[in-house]
Length: 163
Image 1 (cartoon, rainbow, N blue to C red):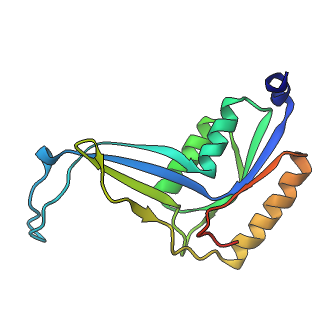
Image 2 (cartoon, one colour):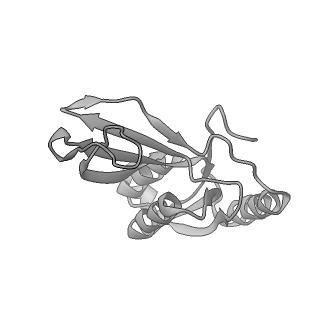
């Protein structure tokens, strides 16, 4: 009964929308860089999935609610574009997903794997500085979403994020 009723629910999610970037390295394609003299790493395969609050949105989308609206901020970068592309594939309303062009990188966890073993992670977006304009847009987004998504409204934040 609950799963049937969710098809009538409008959900808003405010949070830290992240991308998980998987880079599968292959030592056979690596070479020593002419510029640096260091061993380069060749990526044989790469793929990107929704992480953080984005993953929660993907899981909610699988339940097929009437609508999902996101409120948050991403950078004007390749990872932000990938995140928005995946949201659009899930029919998520990104009206209130702010794209901040300066001093903000989409929070991304780069996960290189070599011979099936995860290597040290590479993190993007941990030195972000939201602007006052972005904060105003987020507050407007929350107000707008509260008008249309009469509960539930979810708030999902990373511990490092600015509140």
